[in-house]
Structures are given as structure tokens and as C-alpha cells.
Image (cartoon, rainbow, N blue to C red; front, side):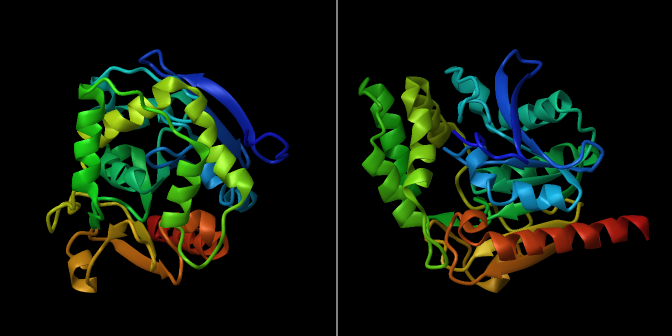
Length: 290
């Protein structure tokens, strides 16, 4: 599994104050400006494979994490570990474990909503935010049916299994037209299903995490500079009109749309995404010095 064979990216495990062990991937100089990358629902550090080396080469200290329940990290099954407040706490614990007092937080999909929430809840620890196709900024297609299934499966004590063809079908459904995925990508996303707890955690998150669109002004408390990255062909998170989106993004937001990209825009179109992130970080740093 990634990052095996990747010279510039190193992986290790760190232990959180809660006792949970999580896997992190690191890139860039140890004294670089810190960035923490948080994958979305069902994702892992692999989702940032096309971003870590570029951001690290630009002089940033970049850390991506397998959140608890994901990737190769521990997968406790208690539902209270996956409430929104618990996830916000976990991000702070991860920052402590990798020795980041403050950092730019990058989050994709569900984690895009999460890092915005962390910025509101722990403003002193977050210097800037990059929200990539963040849930909360729009409505999610079919979420009502999905959440109903997430409630029914455990109640019926049905087995929760993930087949490789299911992962391939999901990737086909959320990619746009900008890029393509490979068999290796399917295998990396499928790999954590070898742990039976993985599927159960994902179902728990579908039940207990907030998946709806925030009300206008819902992120007004995010005072940090924010980059909102969107795939113009994202079939999952529907942000609606420009006016509707503007009413929900934080006050100091820059919105960048990547034409033709789908929900995994940072994987599908890494070049424009990396370029936008680096330009945003340079501008945010200049603002901080002014």
C-alpha cells in the first residue's frame, strides 16, 4: 500500500491521547510551514498521493492522516468516537501527535466540512483552510436513501462487506471527465476492506455525521483565509448557484472551480489544484506578514 516505493513520502504510526493509533504520511522539510491533509469518508492518505510531493517540494511540511476507522489506523467501533465533536477533537489530537501547534488544514469531501468546523472550534490552531468539494457547502445526491440503509443494515445484523467491483463502480460514479483512475487506485481504495471494522465504521459515520447543507452563514465563524476548491462536474455535492454558494462559504474565501473535474478533484486534476493551493498559501502568508 501507498507510500511503499515513494521516496519522498514517509509513513509512520503515531498514538493519540485517546490511545488510538493512526497512520500518517509525511513529506517536505521538518521545519517547513505545516499542512495537515485530512481525507474524506472512506478515504486514506492515498487520496493525497498527487499533492504531498508537490507541496513538500515547495517547502511545506505536509502530513496526511488515516483518520480513526480509516486506512491502516485503528478502527474502534464505539459510535461516540465518530460524532462530529469527537472528530473535531481527533484532528486536534493528531496535530498534537505530529507536533503541529498551528497548521493549514486541507480536507476533502466530508473532511472539507470537518476542517471548516475545526477552524471555527479551534481558531488559534488553524492558520488557513483548504476545503475541497466539501460536504456542507451543498446538498448530497441520494443522501436520504443512503442514511436509511445505514440505519437498517446494523439493525438487521446484516454483514457489511465491500467487493472490489463496488469500489470501482463508486469511483466511476464520482470522477468527472478531467482524469481517469487506474486498477491500482481501485485496489488502494478497496484495501482497507480487509478489516471487517472498516465497513462498520463507515456505516456509523453515515448515521452520526452531519451530511446536510449548512444554513446560510453557517461558516461565518471561520475567520481564517479559506480556499474553496470545486470540481465543476462533481456529481455528489451540489453547491447550487453562485449566490447560494457565496452565502455559505466563510467570509475570507476564494473559490476556484476546476473545469471537468469530479468529486475527487485533487486526484483527478492535481496540477491545477496544487497550483491553486500554493498560490493561496503564498497570498495568505503575505497577508499575515502585512
